[in-house]
Structures are given as C-alpha cells and as structure tokens.
Amino acid sequence: MNLLIRNLRQIVTVPSDGKPTKRKNSLAEIGLVENGTILVRNGQIEWVGRDEEFRHDVPDDLDVLDGSPYVAFPGFVDAHTHLLFAGSREDEFAMRAQGRSYQQIAESGGGILSTVRATRVATKKELKRLASRRLDAMLRHGTTTVEIKSGYGLDPDSEIKMMEAVTELANDHYMDIISTFLGAHAVPPEFRDNPDGYVDLVCERMLPYVAKRGLAQFCDVFCENGYFSPAQARRILLKGKSLGLKLKLHADELSSSGGSLIAAELHAVSADHLEHIDDIGIKNLAASETVAVLLPGVSFFLNHGYAPARALIDSGVAVAIATDFNPGSCMSYDMPLMLTIACTHMGMTPEEAISAATFNAAAAVRMSDQIGSIEVGKKADLILCDLPNYRYLAYHFGANHVSKVIKNGTILEFH
View 1 (tube, rainbow, N blue to C red):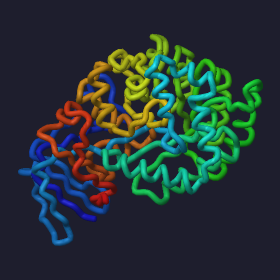
View 2: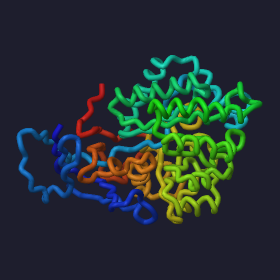
View 3: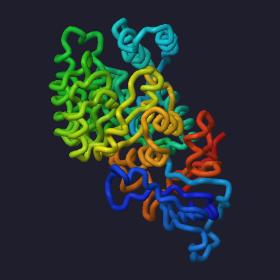
View 4: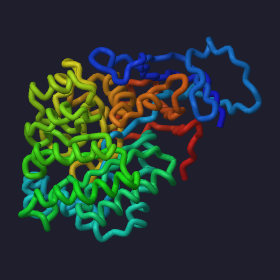
C-alpha cells in the first residue's frame, strides 16, 4: 500500500541520529515535527517532514489520508512479554490485596508454577487462540512489534510446544513477533530437589532442539534468589550463545542478585527488570551496549519498588520500557499506561518515556535499524492518535487514544 498522510498535528519521529540507542540527553530528543506529512511506499517511509516542504507529485496510486486530527508516533515495541499462557491468577491478586506477598504465594505453590500447570495441559491450538486475541488487543493499543517468551512449560515437550506456537503466530499474525526461549523461568516441581539437574535438561536437550529448528532468536534466564543462581544463569546463557542465540536476562528484580553484571559481562542485548540494581550494576551497564528494559507495570501491580530510571539514564545506560504482560505480575498490555507510570513513579519525562517505548525498545530486540522511529527507509509502523499534542498521551491515562494503526504501510481494520 502506498500512502500519503498530510497535515498531521504533530509527528514524533524519535530520530536515531545514526546511533543504535538513545542515551542521556538524547533520550528526550523526540524530533517533533509540527503540521507534518509522511509518505509511505511499499511498506517503508519514503519522506517525512513539514507539510509545506512536501514537493512530491501525488500519483494516482497513492491513498491520501487527512492527518489533521492526529499525532503520529512510531508503533510501540513491547520488548518483554510472557503473553503465551493459559489460565489466570485473579485469586492471587485477591490474596495480595489481603497482604500476602508475591514471594509468599509462589512458595505455597502459586505464582509461575500455577500458570505452568494450566499451560502444560493446554493444547498448542488453544495457546495460539488465546495469544492471537491478546495480540489483536495490543495492536489496538498501538503496539506493532512484540517479544514473546516461553517459560510456562518447564519441561521439554511443553517448552517446545510454546516455542512452536510463537513461531506459528509470527508467521500468521500482523504483529511482528520476536521469540525468546525462557526455559529457565523457574525450577519445576519435579526438579525441586535437583535444580542443577534441570539446568542440565535446559542446556543439553531444550536449547539444542530450539536452536536447531530456529524456534527462538533469544535465550533468557530468570537470575534471582530462589530461581537460578548467577552460576546457573551464566551456564545457560553461554550455552545459548554457543548455539547462535542472542541473550537477555531477568536481572536484579527481587534482590541485587548480580544479574546486571552477568548481562554486561556476556554482552546481553538486554537486562530486564532491575528494580534492585546497585551502583556497580549501573556502572557496568553504562559501559556496555546492553539495554536496560524497565517494567513499570510490575512495580505498580505488585506495589513494590521501582527501577531507578533516573539514575540509569543520568549514568548513560540505554533505557527502554516494556509491559512484562503476564498473568501474575502485570496483567496489562497497555504501553501508553506504562508511559504514564514511568512519568509519575520513575522520574522520567514524557519525551524520555516515548523514546524508551519506541526506539530503545526496538534496540532491546536488535531491531532499531528497522523500526522504533519515523525515519526514511524504516518500516512504516505508525500509530495515529487523536490528541491535541504528544504529551497528552501519557497525561490522559486509562483511555485508548489510538485511532489508526499502520503496520508495514497498511492501515489495519479492526472488527
């Protein structure tokens, strides 16, 4: 589809300036264009700028859209989700409302293992049906690229079922999907007394199978006390890396467990969570290419401490924002809401939050050369929001302001 969008109120371009990530002051540089125009050909952005500077002829094969009611943003990139799951955990939500902690619920057999039980018995067809509905809803809220992790199977057959489902969804759905193997999400009950035995299973059976069949692009580990130790995480990540997978890491979520140090040491693409990162971890990430993926919705939903976004940004770490959509700690796929929380609870400005949810989020899945900004030559993944200005998006929370979603240059129709 060839498309010309004219007279947009504003275009938030989030320019890359030729760099793979936005850091420090550049995170707030969103490249705002007033009264703008975007030309799309063959799914790519061909021209962007002020409408009065547009000098191209308008051929007959071009669909022209009046953009005057809209502010244009790059499509959001949700770089951390667990959206492939069965079941739900509203009973645990009620328990937390009565004072029980996430860790206490997990220790009594709930938490991740509750979802594991439901996901193991679900068919691949059912998992795909549930995930497809969630992906549709994410598109409606402005997310055009999403990362999906396994990790609710925790045995070879179930983890492979999940990875196959993600691969099939990637082939069938409008959404661009990045696949991550997270077999090391938790130690399953059958290995409770032999966690190293489960690490053996992940390294010797699951990872080789997944990598050989191209079912994952990334390998991830939950490095945390009570889950996987730094030594276990390092072993799994090195195995994944040896098989050609890029690396991610759940790091320093519940305690300062050293995950951020491992992420920097192994050149992981991202270190995620970081609610309890210490000064040494911040220093190491700042000196690395690893993107810090912060998850505001988790801290909000669990009512615990937030990642130190301000310290990370001011120290020069590349910061991204994602939802961590999952049934236990953040049952939300609403990226604009994550922007609001980042601004109100983490000390980020609206401009920084937008860059973190688009360009740097694309960097967290190694796609910032293709998506995450409205620049010539990039994929035309855009959202048009009915807003008076770009700052209104995070300000007016709890409403979906996305009027049109353009994916690969095509205006999507929702029914």
